[in-house]
Image (cartoon, rainbow, N blue to C red):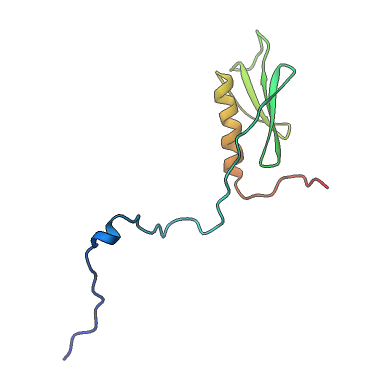
Length: 109
């Protein structure tokens, strides 16, 4: 009886050791890069368009029943609140990232 053919592996050589390994678990979809987000002051808060969606951050007045001083809205829908302006802006950017490759809810013509 003969042994079945087996693939042999070689140890990395000097010319391949410097190259990063192929990441086979990487998502095959095209990766998009996001440009820096510009927040524009608007009334008592800020607004920005991220990946084609309108985001707004507002500062609640003193004595407001909200549990945090800042709130975040995507397309007019509340998406969360936070203790600082920067944390709420970051929430908006993260929200846009989670939506990923989904198309915007409205199409501009």
